[in-house]
Length: 347
Image (cartoon, rainbow, N blue to C red):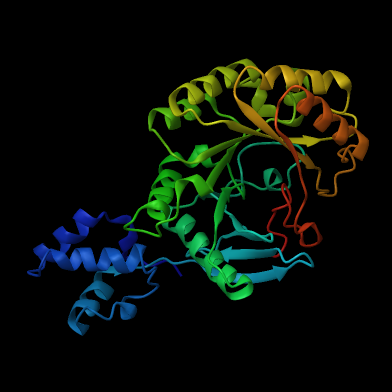
């Protein structure tokens, strides 16, 4: 149910302080509330136990905390957990906990649906409903951290913005959420443990570089040949490989951080020697490494994963050219939680 009260997490700390002063209270009460919201992840005003009952009632009368809730949860045979996350307006997104021996990673959504038309991705077949607010992005991390502690006995170690939506088309909210997640007045996670994945929007990549962000950048490339990439990712017609390369070179010049290229190898699309050579050439133009990904089926017969020997050939040729290449194994594909499969099938 949508409340007509203001979402308190839309307020800055200064605005919270001003609210208390205007209500004949001490400014430091705003600091206390801010800590409850962003450090302690309070879901209700009742939890704010160092505030008087009268103060909590005043907050209740003026504000709401639009926290998310795990609506449904599915566990994979490999330990991956997929969550259907219900938002305050009853829309759903999906987020995933991916465990390995050394870490647990949260795969986070930034939009309800997606406006991009990557032909091989299930999320792209959904209509984009709206951007997520910063607190809704933050809440996904909080929920998956709880699951990490419950099922794997340690706190969440990594975050990837590889869920539903294109993070750079929700720039302000994503950056605000990352600040709340990494700030000492928030969850205090290291920026180095966060990776933002994008289809590659040149002007926004440059903006990130100008904004001096500290997290990692991953780009869904999938081909270093314009004609092939455009078939897979129509956005390449608007921002082609040359435009993308210029933005990535600018990113590296400003941040000195290597780019990770995410690269699904498809049968009949990018499984020829010329595709490998084009990727090698592209990688040599900007400091980068490659994550090779086996395609995860979404029920479209046109797209199939390339044969294993082709993927191995990619690895051998990339490594022979001193380019780091890793084959990323799919996790959670039995519950449609793997890369490209998030499509609210639990709805």
